Image 1 (cartoon, each protein chain N blue to C red):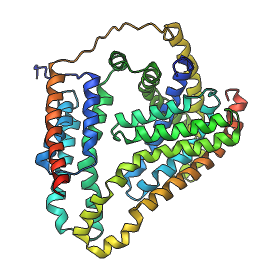
Image 2: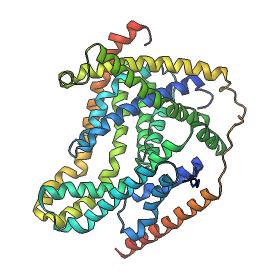
Image 3: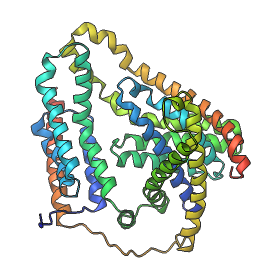
Length: 239
Length: 193
């Protein structure tokens, strides 16, 4: 247990892997072709304090593949529709969804900004995206406290309140929007005092760079993608 | 674009992007019920009108709405919806921006129509499903027989996609109208609209 096996990837590596995994969604291949690409999110999650989700991911994926190969040919009726929907969406969408989950949960905002600025992405995109990452957790806090406040006044989420969904939406939406407008003003004042409007290039406390782990994982991804693309093109040419 | 948009505009775009994302994801949970998945863009369109109209009260420059669409697309991409939403969202947001510009960013009619166009970008999340359609059909043909597929095929074709687009547009316009009312009821009184 004392062995430290965790690694953290450069945000750029995560994004490249995410782009490559996106191609998988359009095409279903047998497991020996897409196997390497399927394993990449598993490896990433396993070595980054998300062991539970890694195991759950692989179990669900294997289950979906099992259903697709062994149970589907004999299934009929309504059962078959549900099984087809489950197994086909899972086997295509789950790897990339898990990779997205990994990217969001393991990337720090400062890391993200620093690596984006090094790859010369315009400021107009970097600032809103970093605000998004920063603000999502506080929106959840906000929702929690609004729920508490509503319960205190006797508007808890129960069957009675669900009879009037418009009211529920209004009660949630208005406080969130008012606080959002306030936050936008405060945040821009705070970042202006810190010199965010300065056009000069910025320095970073946290330097990101591509390490050996990044390169090896990228290499594995490209090998997997190569096999995948080769099989896909061959299938197209024959058909 | 860099000369025109200042830091305050960029932060406003970020904050409102978060609110739209939270709303879309909250309703996305309903998508686990198979049939409702098709109705998802319409539900999302019905709800996003209020924040969008409040966002428009802060917009007076070309580019902010386009940027909002681009950011939404990027977040969708990062959370695993493939890169299709980036293209679709940005395209529709750009058209919405042009419509707003025609109304000089103050016409109420143009802002309501622009929400209808903007929210059609959510269809970008659905498009992969329609691209995958053939695989679903093939798998069903094997296990359920031809008759069944012939019955269900009409519900999964491009016509349904177009109908979904139109319904999303109508829902978007309706919810923008609702947003205008809510804006008058709550925010103008509080002095922030």
